Amino acid sequence: MHPKKTLSLGWITAVLFIAGSLVLGSILADYSFISQTVSEIGQEGSPLKFIWQLFSLLVGLLLILFSLGIISFARRNKWSVVPGLFVLFAGLSQFGIALFPSPHPLHNVFGLSMTIGYFSPLVFFLLWKDKLGVALKWYSLLAFILIQLGIFLNLSPMFAPDLYPLEYYGLVQRFLLFTFYLYLALVALNTIKASSFNREGIKATKKAG
Image 1 (cartoon, rainbow, N blue to C red):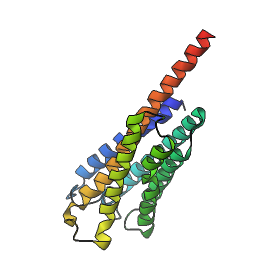
Image 2 (image 1 turned 135 degrees about the horizontal axis):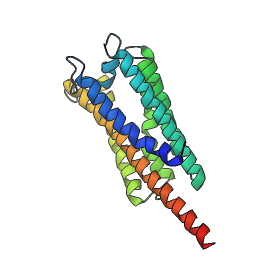
Image 3 (image 1 turned 180 degrees about the vertical axis):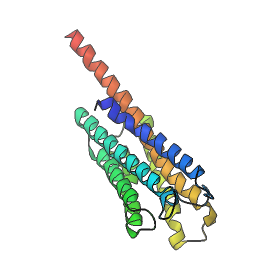
Image 4 (image 1 turned 180 degrees about the horizontal axis):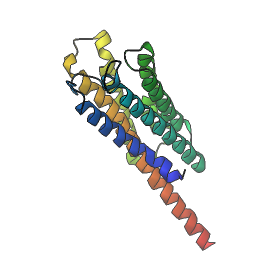
């Protein structure tokens, strides 16, 4: 696949996940975006279980392909491939979440493993520094802080159930997920821009030679 197309999968996956989860949730009877998690759309017994599984597997596959695009982009530029590996782990975790719908015990295991992928903004911030511009560097740090806040709020019912009304748990989870996917979209757009700039530079060099 063309490098630009592979990198484009980052923002495509973000749009697909956000729009798809909203559309599928809206057609499920008595489903609440405010109080219910996205996994409940495709949980055991849900009429959308099979559709949600296919949807989640597609999201996982696109994440994996996007991560391979990041790794390839990093290698071409002789940058660290580690950020791409963290995104790859997120894609593999998404696969596990899809294969084992809630309330299967492994669903939560793969859900927790997604936390590794959630550290990717910090890895981009530390290892790519200003390579894609100062703006993305600081957006990476901001995204990491927001994602950590989302993780804390998502796990807080286990140790602080009175921290906030649990009828808002669906919104809390979406804050975490949407922040992560929107960050990936930002990474995709910036790597595409850098990739295009690099190719134009190579062409100009060849013409000058």
